[in-house]
Length: 287
Length: 254
Image (cartoon, rainbow over all chains, first blue to last red; front, side, top):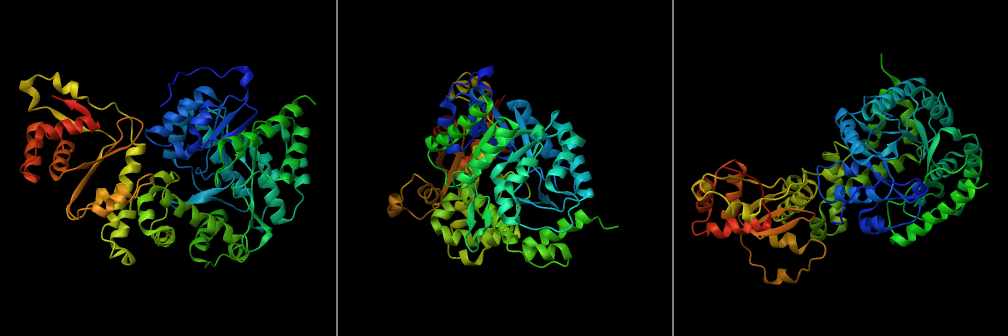
């Protein structure tokens, strides 16, 4: 295990572009020295009592800013967040002092069963009220505000009272939360549901956005490009890079993550993709 | 009054699992091609988690067989919490009664050692009791000393089959050459993570009985009798030295 000595992250290391932290890349990630490089982890993977993954996270945290990104809080369920899960999240937040904590506008736990996906729901008045309460409860538990991410969509759901941007904006107004805008999710959803991704991003409330996600997707094996899947198993595509460049030209730079969860390439390959985002961010800053 | 969001989520879950629903909105959704993305993602997420947690089982039976068996298990015992590293504690028991695995009599026990590995990997950290600490004990008190197993330590004696060798040869980075000379008889295993890495050891019947007694709070005298009960010719001082070298103890009381 590398020597651990916590140091403060300096101002010049303010997070620019980051990478999802993957176990095969622990040592490379700890040693990487690119200015502004930060790492994001799925909180649930570190909700363990001990062992090397917490030790590695500790090491990486001493050298880089960290983001805790949850996939299991199930904010969109018509149920209170699990108090044990909130307590576990709070322990991670207190220990690792992440610069952002985020979750999804989705649900995954229902009647005690966890489905490892980000499930959709009708954006009704009732749903807004319930999710407002769930976000508030989460923020009270960890004593700080969270970011909420737009998920990928595969279904045309009847019965929405709000479009997604209205819903997210109202959630921010009611809870003080911020937004994590996943540009690839917008691209995938626009393709699947038939809306204009540029128009969506142009209307997105930039003032609430505190983090951006970029990822790769794939075509459905049976249906092809009419149904894109947010698979995180490929490089960011050219069209998503164009949406991203246009977005940060409008709203300014935001900490941006390259997400890769499957078919993991060498660390250098991911770092090169991350450096591309870093260049665009630095250019957006000096406009 | 039925709450619409709740009714939607009840129906959506039912449609994910069985493809049937009486909820009109969810029925519309389930008929769209995109619904299968959710169904596939949920199923793949569960099976992939089991595959990650049971690598020796997967290597023994092959990827296709494993995925088919795992899919049956997932339907019976879906994840109960979002920490998928802990998912599948019932999988070894499932394999013991899974009819297509009936001839693979060792599979369930091999799965148990995969399970032990994960549990040791994420157990709480503790500096193990060192041999020198025992050496500093008052010899008169030694017989009444209690050694508690390390929080990460997992062990089991398998009466009929060489489970430890089978498991070890089927973890990644291991080779299966040793299987050619395998003696088909009982074998025990100890897995423990004294520091960063999970260490694995073969452990005799007496050694396993000794740790069982230590875990129950027995002192060294009583644990020694337990070991002798399981293995009459065991060398107790060699056993204790082996366990201390392995870092198998987390606490010592006198």
